[in-house]
Image 1 (tube, helix red, strand yellow):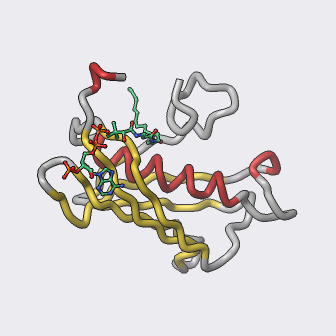
Image 2: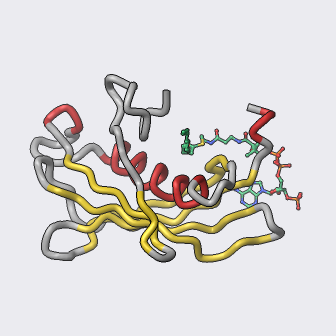
Image 3: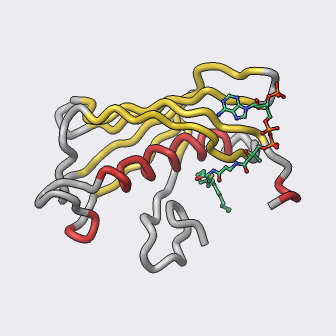
Length: 128
Ligand SMILES: CCCCCCCCCCCCCC(=O)SCCNC(=O)CCNC(=O)[C@H](O)C(C)(C)COP(=O)(O)OP(=O)(O)OC[C@H]1O[C@@H](n2cnc3c(N)ncnc32)[C@H](O)[C@@H]1OP(=O)(O)O
């Protein structure tokens, strides 16, 4: 019951993803329950949004992975009750196992509020 994407998780983000060319995209609107500072989305949940969107770029290509490293640059506070677009893409694949991914959160009007880069490691799903 994935926190990011399962429709059955009562406290989850219930994200749905689509590929558009080589970009994986989802939309999300944070509610009051997702706040850190009043009116703004909690930074840890912002990271979860980006982590999940980068993971789904790989999942939609049938690649089973786990996040092994992530860096997040928060440039603009992300307001709640605002439609956000989250995008991810792959920048490089190393040794056929380490995927260098990137993602961003776009505010209405087009400004990028948050950028992330992360490394994902291919795993054998039977091991989980
Ligand atoms: C419909 C169904 C829906 C379900 C959809 C779900 C969608 C997705 C949901 C997803 C939710 C979101 C996703 C989440 O939230 S995933 C949850 C958060 N992530 C984790 O919990 C991962 C924990 N880590 C591990 O379990 C292990 O580390 C794994 C299994 C990943 C690898 O352990 P393993 O023992 O196999 O590998 P190794 O340690 O020998 O390393 C191998 C090689 O890699 C190199 N290396 C290692 N680390 C790094 C690094 N950081 N940068 C660069 N290189 C690195 C290392 O030096 C070595 O190189 P070499 O010595 O071979 O040269």
